[in-house]
Length: 335
Image (cartoon, rainbow, N blue to C red; front, side):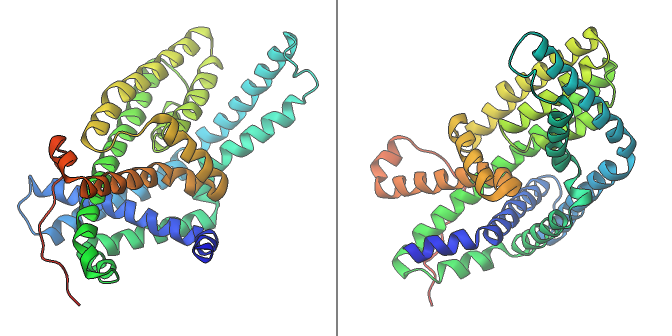
């Protein structure tokens, strides 16, 4: 047991990359299934269409962030630094204990952290390499998911294989729905923030919309970071624009929190916000930004597996409270 824990610790980075590939495969598989409802062609062709669309979306985001928004980001960084300086100076004037802090140093530290989030894709080779590995692993799994499922099942005792298939079905269903909801939330938050900020005359609306959409992949923490950025940039113009930025943030978060998130939770697995936040803090501290991004799907998979185990161990309770999950019956694998 101790050796297994040590192996997980030392292999945490590649294990997270593999899990990231599984998450990407779930996105591709979910898109392929959804496309099959309106386009009666073979699964291979549907997967090709979804894969090309996903790759085009990733490349387009990188191009937009790295080329089109470069000038905006320079202004964004300068404006944000100025606003942080003003905020610290105001706090010091009211005797909040920051008069001994160098505002320039604090602003530089803040911008250094934010810079890692906004420019990691274009400046860090490691981030690009990790992204490529996740995409490649996800593509291979999405092309033939049953191959890898059978491979894992064959390593288990014959008596446990049927239970493994049921758990795998439930986890796959949960992951597909969770990622569909997450992508929907990212699109709504990103596009909604961009359009509303643009209508209110907030500068750098496109950049703020892009950052808000990307940060929406991180529940709880992403909303805090994006709200901080939106409000600071809004108040850099004047009070009216700042109040409009606050209103935009509240509207977008209300739509996401009271419409999208409950709908997704109802269709998949309901995760307590404190549980997700705790997992994000732990995984983020241990494994960095990759652990922070994958904490939510990992917790969802663990809960789905535990729920399936509970239903298998207590079939009567499962009958009393049915939870329909599309699956398939299959004979136990042999060999």
